[in-house]
Length: 186
Image (cartoon, rainbow, N blue to C red; front, side, top):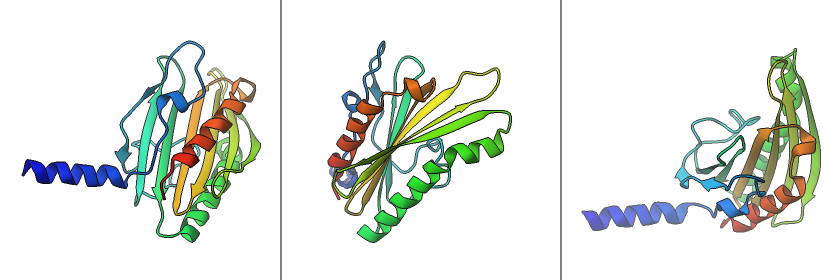
């Protein structure tokens, strides 16, 4: 029975796409990154801007954090085909591109903005975005998103901390996104 359980665990882990490690995230100036386990399914809380946008079927995730106010999550989804993965990647890009405007509709007393940091020439392509949100009497938040695809597998990396777009480590996050897409194993 124990051998059967070990084989099932090995088969399950083998089905997971490749994921980032803690050292692959943009360095934090005062705290190391900590990586959670690679887990089948979606995270308990959807990444900011992507509530309801990621399918549970074929998904895996890994959460990251620092000792302070910075966190990240990577979600990868094995779609049924390359075409389905391409549709999912475009859908995720649209959700992130519309995030600031959608957030403002829910928080009319706040401010929000976004920036398109462009595409990356990795596998079938990747795209990086930034979103800033703030409400009165609260700390502002900044989020970076990397969305990419390799064959039938799509990954999204969401990084966030207190601050605004000027505080975001865009160049390092672009490298993180490229690494995430290169690690996928379609």
